[in-house]
Image (cartoon, rainbow, N blue to C red; front, side):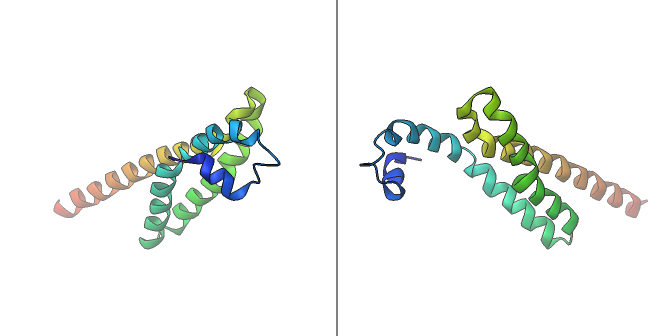
Length: 119
């Protein structure tokens, strides 16, 4: 994110809250780290829906939208309050890793089916 201060000024009256311009840009940068992985995770959710794996799609959606964020929102502020803004990034990273594992498992199943067909 190139201009977090400009984004803050769109949504917050900085005349009433000038301290937000000191704290806000760093917190916005922490939050927006998650955007690349977020888009990949959404892609995998739609991929699983398109190949009729609704259970996997639901599992990914629940992990990234509820389970991981709730756990991290409870745990991270007890370590340091700024870490709260990393909860989405950490959640998306964990879900991305789970997606990679699920894809590898699916690849192995497909290759095993191909071996059985050839035999």
